[in-house]
Length: 121
Image (cartoon, rainbow, N blue to C red):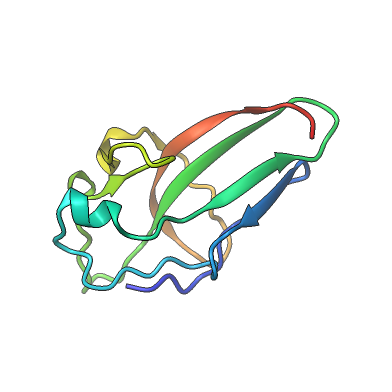
């Protein structure tokens, strides 16, 4: 599976740097794999910097793009997410939130992976 759409990076106070070679994530023959095999995959790395002069809050979501009717999605209970090299956690254990992607793409579900605040600079 290839990600064909660009990531949504919009903000007035955040500078986001994607540290991977491309803005997409490519998963080839990724189902089924063991947790150990999955953790060997190259991660998706980015940094967020607060460029404003006040405290700023952020939220990182994983949004599921709506699939055509003829395609089936793997259940969220079988998909694991690892943040900062932590042990994998099932996607369905993350809170569902209102999708943030609004332009050109229809999303089914959005999962809040993490949130927090950043001091200026």
